[in-house]
Length: 343
Image (tube, rainbow, N blue to C red; front, side):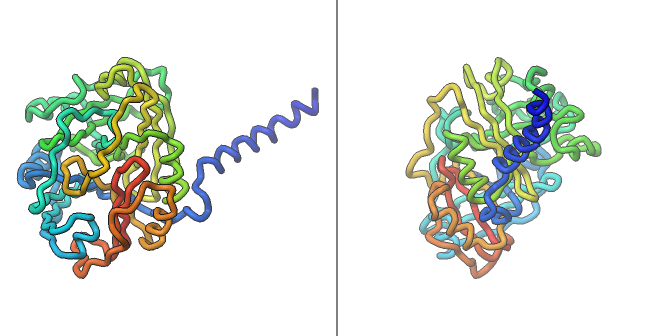
């Protein structure tokens, strides 16, 4: 009995080390991606979208360019494109809005649901949920949740967090999120008098967390920083999905917002992304992943753990108008687009 008791501290240490090793990316993947962001989305009317994100949510426009030509066609996988790209910043984070002047894409499906696997949103942190919700009501935003939800205290990771889903003018889902003291990144507690503070993460619906981790963690090198299982009436109303039970896994690079994997353990009837989805469609999001070697990431994705290739190869635009020298658009296992770039 004494021998068994004496061995327990060592056993605990071994189990803890094993858990850390399981969460860490393989050595070959470590360092491939060192930053996330900005998060991009395709919009139907740039002036309308810029007005919405600036006037309603406090984003600031920092760049506005128009692009065309073979380099950008190959990068985005859309022939004959002419695009206008506007970057908007909130705190340290940014979004990138792209309007396809030609060719025009399809609208977001009117019957989209929060557990369909083309779902993606950005979570915008607010300093005061009641004031932020009042601002959204004042501007008559489209609700996705019936009202802000306070997540229950039985869930130690999420208890006390308040959240609300809504939509932008094109139907892209968005979230505002408030963290109580002791939850979330400490910098969200260190704010001035701003109401909208920055972007905490982008969330994507996945069919199989383990399969997605083989892409994001094992291939791309992001690290797992949080895991939880959320359910109950508050979660159902937040997502507006009856019976919602989610496995949530958060990953991060060394810099930038997190990437949150949302696997619906129930219900399991979320629809896959359309096989013919294109970057010009308004349902298109693309998460930028910054790497020291875009070619190495492209090769790793071609190895099969992620979903596939949109760009035929790494593209070096003659004019690096978007702040990178080389880039490629690829997909994760559920079809979410990832724009891998090299400064």
